[in-house]
Length: 151
Image (cartoon, rainbow, N blue to C red; front, top):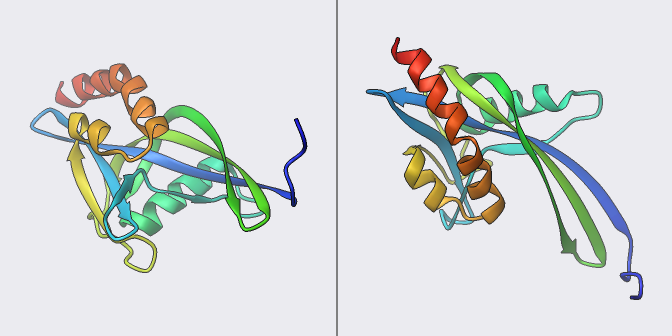
């Protein structure tokens, strides 16, 4: 198979599935982009010298106004896309996070909307299969967090 034309660039991002509980039910902070047509988890580029964890917490705070603590790493998603003649190889580290403060407020310079979405609906609403699977795989951990929060 011939090598792709152009060059390849590597990008590293980090993000989080921020969970909050209302009456024992888990809700996930989701963001909308592209005119509210694409829903997903908050994420963004890891800055030079920044850890993946610090970037995830910063991006969540910047895009949603929320403070959170990391419960554990969820998964790393890798995918490719083109930007002109450049092939982009993107790696995104996602973390399960628990909401610790702040009010959900979208940063409109970066996202179109931000909402608390019931976990089941969040799985359906996520625009990308990889993020749907990520949330599905986190269900058991989220259930155990809910049990600890209600006791």
